[in-house]
Image (tube, rainbow, N blue to C red; front, top):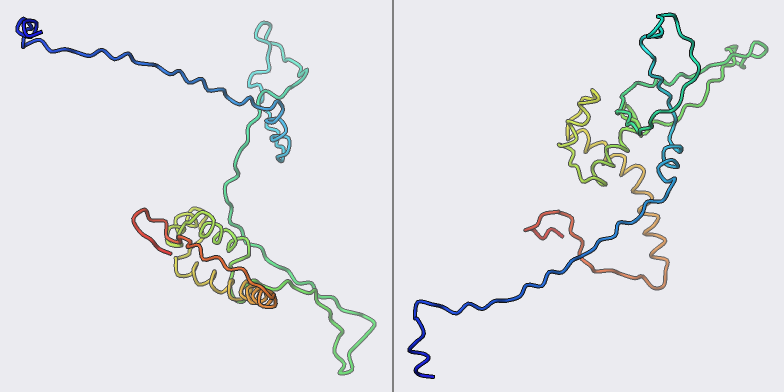
Length: 208
């Protein structure tokens, strides 16, 4: 054994050969249900856009051709951009030609108008619902919503958006919150959950 060690060249190193095992992973794609695309498109409002033939003359004799039919070539889902418009609520007033009031004035009856969401504000429920969706569902702060509203020509700032959302919450949601609290307190046993909920989505922060 000593002689074999002496005969071995010190510059030659022994290399171990390791056999690599290649694992082949076969992924099976889930087959799409037939008719799912058609069912989805059929459920949307339908708009037909006919692409007219620019030259209706025969390419051979140049006589005017007659339309014999048309067919759906393709279908696509399109998104309608947000549109800002003004709704003028008109109140009707009727007068009775047969009656007069005790003071001699005409009997006038006007239509009952729906209550404004916020008095003296032109913000409708549709606008505030969108603001709340962007803020609480998509986590888009008020100051970052300004560009979105500028696209539809609505001039707002972050403070105005926040003020209106707070007013709506206090007027319409706070009574509901108080009522739910009242119902809970009537129960003999109240279940409490102390699981912390992260309100600030920061990787290095613990905002509970």
